[in-house]
Image (cartoon, rainbow, N blue to C red; front, side, top):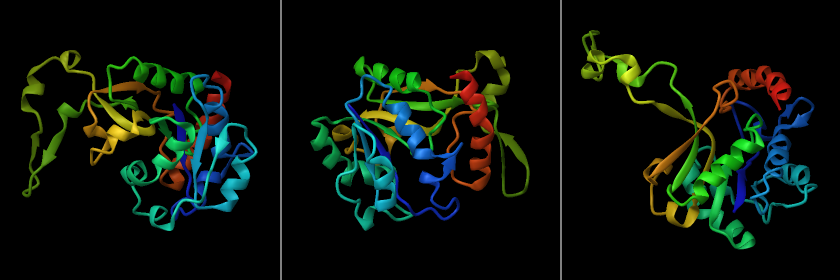
Length: 230
């Protein structure tokens, strides 16, 4: 199995977020250094369209960038499934593996043992997808929805008749990492179709998907706590 980090240079809301400095170091370097502590990974693939990113990551042993990612896979509209279907195979051929840990360049607060736990759970062979999640703060079955007149009604009325503690645990995709076989994942249109799925539950203050500058500031605030707990 190998790790795969998509790291294009273009990002409008957080400019150059994949190499933005966190605690004096490009954030992607934090992620790579954590991945390299996972003994069950063959290496790390960094898929980028940027020479600047290549220069930062090529200094690491077991990190490969191969040729630059094509412009058709580097736009704002490029999704994870586009990368699975049209980019991952070249790295899979390099590592002679179709099993991949797909993680983001901004997932700097994910610990090596959490990545390893995801890999171990996948290798047990009982799940097609292992993904990082966080628990919902408020149970989604207790959601209220608004109709066109402005009136509220429960989304799941029966849930209000049950004791809260009896409701099933609920999670949300944290957007930090996924473990799967990319050859079989190609058959789907989105990751969550690749069932059965197993969770790796993360603390919410470390499972930060950086889409805005507010997200970045939250990540910076959490970093010092992360360092203390390592």
